[in-house]
Length: 75
Image (cartoon, rainbow, N blue to C red; front, side):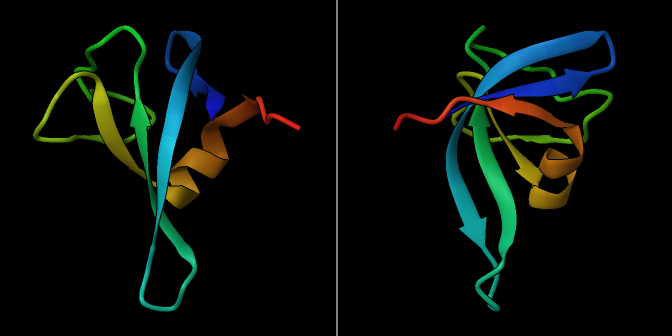
């Protein structure tokens, strides 16, 4: 799902690929992909690169919710 996030230098669309849930069933983190194909994972919003690279990274669900400025849902 395409989502629009607020970054330090403005806004950028990324693709949300998966929501990971905690033991309590609540959303804990989100796997996202930067369509540019890379992400340094530096600065805000806080995020961590995934080992496979290709612009994929993980964010805490709460951090995503705080930076989310738009989403495109089919339907």
